[in-house]
Image 1 (cartoon, helix red, strand yellow):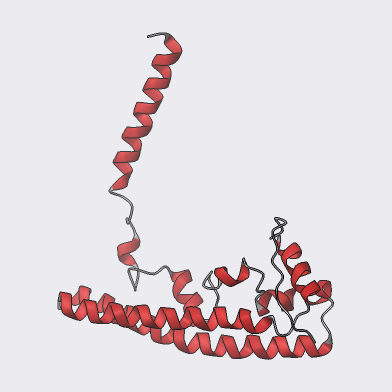
Image 2 (cartoon, rainbow, N blue to C red; image 1 turned 60 degrees about the vertical axis):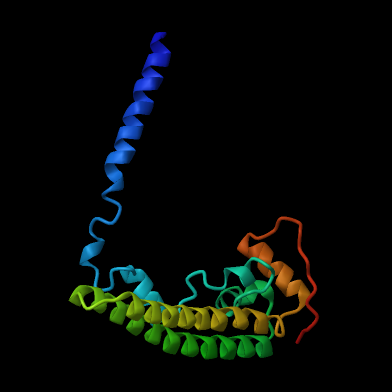
Length: 181
């Protein structure tokens, strides 16, 4: 084995040993969280009605979100009416998302407390996890449906401009939306 091959072999071996050694540390520090399954940022996001990627399917398929539309209002040349409609849509979505987020966090806390107390069984966990899943689905729907409603406020040209400004241009746009104020 020549010297370079030997060095590459040693480096690869060291890398593999390092990776396997650190795998057991994957959750280190997370045991101190109030809700073990969620970061502080996630909890804050749910309680404050943040999108947190829940509407990515809409956003990346030419359905703009009201928060970013408002941020880009000047570049999109929104009319006063469009700004007002977008702000109302955003406020309504945020209020709904906060309410659902509070419920979601409460259920995650209940799940966490079950495990902390040791009073946990498969049947209670199954039931609570299904409930948590439904709540999270409802939250995602609130965000995604707001993107769908946003299409009724913007022109096709504004949607195209939005995608450009957000960096989503790959030339495969499918602007099939009809509306416009």
